[in-house]
Structure formats: structure tokens, C-alpha cells
Length: 169
Image (tube, rainbow, N blue to C red; front, side, top):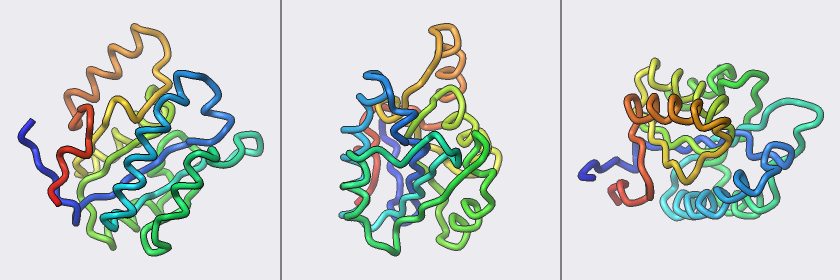
């Protein structure tokens, strides 16, 4: 892929990586890749919007990620909550992206069939370029649903493996 993305115009959205939601081996497999992205963000001053689903049972962001998130400058980490699948349901997200002039969003987290998908759809509608790395999202549901969801991601986002390779330093 020859696509190169400007770091200055990029942000990361981490969705619902709470202990309650990352409760299967399949879902936990994406954490190591997400840690690599968080380290990259820390080194390159890329902001991260960390979303928690506001719910009494969902718990905190999983421990493996919170350790890495501590390395992000306070200027570049935004901890937000949402009550619906779509992270844009929290109006602060679009406001923060506009005032920081971010145009490209790497979206990672769970569930690929719900929260990641709904957030991606709204981001595309709002004119953002969305990057989805298939190794950084999980929670697809059944094979039939996964095929439909992946088809949407392929048509509407930059849907790749190894997302870090497309950023211009």
C-alpha cells in the first residue's frame, strides 16, 4: 500500500477495552498490537481518546493497557465515557478532534460488530479518514456477520494490517 498518513492530522480512538468486554482469548489477542500503537503515540505525540462504556458492571480499562497509557503526555490523552455504541454520542469527541485539527482516526478496540463499527460509520459521515487495522479490533460475532462488517470496513475505511507502516514521520 502506497498510502501515507500525516501524523500531525492523526488521532487514535481506543474503544471499550474494559476488563468485562475483553473476556475471551480472541479479544485479548489484540492487546499486544494496541500496546505497540500506544507506544508509537507516546513517541510521536499523537493524541489518544480512551473511551469507557459508562456502565456499572463494565469495569476499568484492562490493566495491560493502562500501564502503557501512563506514558502518554497529559496533553495527548483524553479519557471519555459513552452511553451508546457510537463514541461520537459523546459530543466532546468531535469537539476535541476539531480543536486539535485531526482529520485521520485510527480506531481500535471492541466490539468490531457494534461500538467500533458505529463509531467508524459516524466518523466517515463527519468527513474523517478512518483507519481500521484488523489486528487491533475484535468481537465480530458470527462468520456471516463478520463478512458483512468487513465488507463495510473495506469499502469505507483504510482497512489494513500493520497500520503503523502508513504513517509519515
